[in-house]
Image (cartoon, rainbow, N blue to C red; front, side):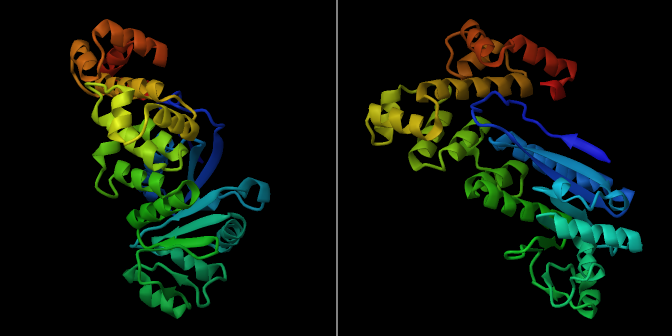
Length: 328
């Protein structure tokens, strides 16, 4: 079994809640599918970048080695049967019995591509609605599967869902993100991974977490976007309040109540997050980065950076040039 534990690069940014583990098991019908299954890993890595109160772990294994029969193991897990639209999902009797147990025990399962025909192999095919690729329509009709005429199908009130292709499976997964974490986070994730056009006004992991924590409170969203647009020349809190049509005290109190952190502290952290990104992904000199993030000098940036990240700008930049981005 291939195991991935997906963590956050900036776990220290505005995290005050207890992390909860969620597990995703991706089953392959053949080893050649392993490369494409990496997109599921990328999806949940991106979600870990954005979500605040959960950590997602992805396991990839061959279907023949699927664990089954233990209800405690499957509690809270998602099972994804990673098929494609070129081949049906073929199993021997023992594999079918094991996968049937998985479908019975997993609170959420997704059948992708040809894996949808498992519904019949496991005795669930009679008049079941599913997302079926055109390649399998004739076979599906013969075994009693009804096509939903869409690329993905979320079974209402059920455990077993389907997607006609691997790409539509990602869109289906984003729908479950909306159910689990709210539509705001789901839409941000879609933009982040390119399922929709990116929204540049909120291109900050910290900002996303704060807005999510606030329940997408309108005032929090507006002030966060205002701060992101004014990183180079930071506004006074009174100016932010005036722009939002609120008093300084009202804005500060609302922000603290909704996010659990102070507005001024957050503004500084947003600027430091931008500096971190510029150090990591650009060749800009530190003096220019300090000016681009509202610090009076490279020294001022360095002091604030060390206090926030427990490392130095020089260390982040040296890792970049050493080719060790994955260690950051």
